[in-house]
Amino acid sequence: MITVKSEEEIALMRKAGAITRDVLELIGENAKPGVTTRRLDAIAYDYIKRNHAVPSFLGYGGFPNTICASIDDEIVHGIPGNRVLEEGMLLKIDVGAGLGGFHTDAARTFAIGSVSPEKRKLMDVCRESFFRGIAVLKDGARLGDLGAAIMKFVEANGFSVVRELVGHGIGTTVHEDPSVPNYGIAGRGIRVSKNMTLAIEPMINLGSRKVAQVPGDDWTIVTADGSPSAHYENTVVIGSDGVEIITL
Image (cartoon, rainbow, N blue to C red; front, side, top):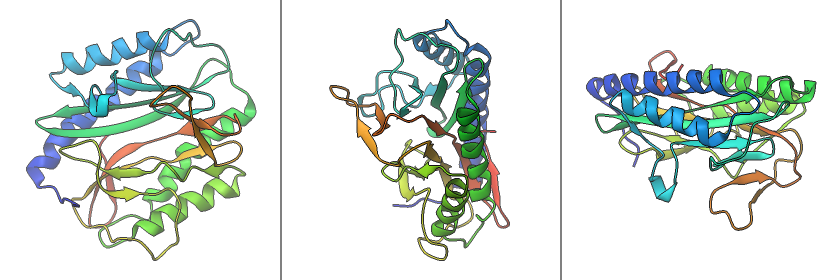
C-alpha cells in the first residue's frame, strides 16, 4: 500500500534525514586507505545512537550491521568486516536512520584516495543521474518519467543501469510501496502525489547490467562480470512543483 505522509510525519522524517545525511558526511571524512569497513560501521552506529535515533538497517530482515559497505564490483548490501580500504577502491555506503517511528535512507559512493578516470566518471554519472531523474518528479508525474530520465543519461555515458535492484517508498518501514525503478518508459508507471516519500537510488555498472549473488552470502550483490559499480541515493518528499531532498 502506498502511503501519503502528514506534515507532522514529514517533519519527523526531515529530522531523521538530517542524521542520515550527517552520518554519510562523517563516513566520507573517515573513509581512507587503511581503515576497515567495520570501523566505519561503528562510527555510523555511534553517531546515530548519540543523536537519539535508531539505525534503520540493523536487524532489518536479519541484516547484521548499521551500514551496507560495498566495494568495487559489490553493488549493494555488502556486510562490514575486517576488509581494509585501499587506494583506488570505490566504496558504496548505504545507511538509514529512524526517528519517532519514521525512517530515511541514503547512499553515497566514495573514492578511496586516487581512483581511475573510469571509476571517477562512473561515480559522477551515477550521482548526476539521480538529479536528472528527480528533475521530472512532482505531484502527478509518473515513475516511468523518472526511470526513463535516469536510464537515458546513464546509457548516453556508456554505462548500464541495474534492473534487479530498485528504489522504494519509505516511511514507517525502510521499504514501502511503490517500487521505484531506475529505468522505464516516460508516460508510464504509477502517478506520484504530494507528500509521498521515496528513496530514489540509481545503481549503475561500468560493464554489463547483469548481477549475481555472492556464494554463501545472503546479502552481497555483485556485478556478474566483475566490473565496478556505483550507487547514489536520497530520500525525497514529492511536492507540487518538484521534490524536497531530506537527506542532502
